Image (cartoon, rainbow, N blue to C red; front, side):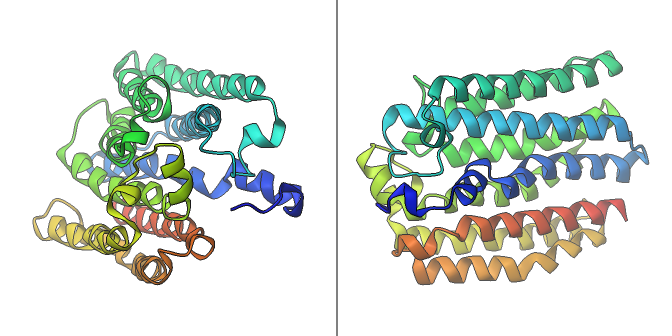
Length: 298
């Protein structure tokens, strides 16, 4: 936690700041929503899909960048060597780079709406952006009240998946809404896991994350329940005929789920060892959502 910045190779710090693996969080809701649309309508618009993915990546980049800016104002990132603000020492520059990413992403969404002559997708994505702002942005900072996981679930689950489905079909679907739950839970777990190694910093900055509120031991137990819920939910929706049976391919990601829960259970109280758990959660999220969407495509 207090290691000198000079002891960290700059390249690793920049990679940690940019977080390339985390951008699957932006891609997977679009993938699943599009896959559900294809399963129901046999329609797949590659231009719309590609534009939506690019826009989603840019909007998530804005959220990550702006979070670094907002966190620098509360002091919670003083020990976070890979914060973009700490790396550059220029908060204003990072702030405007974030805004540029947001505007660029929204232009992609506006392009989709223009092609379709329908502003619905713009409205949904603006709502997602609003949730992204109140998560960390002043004066709301709802993430500091422990509400970040709830915001994350709705933004990357029901809203994002539904928007992706609508971008392909210009219609609504209960199946896409059900599928959004399967996407929303593992996405939320990534954020939940990111708190285990920074409990002391969170407490010092007044951030009452779920892990701070529960304590690391109880939070590790809760992780079992939420991680395990993804797979029975999928099976249940298959049995009810809402999902095709091929969506059970997502169960192939179960080893990552087991690895995640065991790792956190064993190391929840050891910040240096548990700090990588969010990357295990990212792998679980990626493979479960990729295979889940593939099930609809098949």
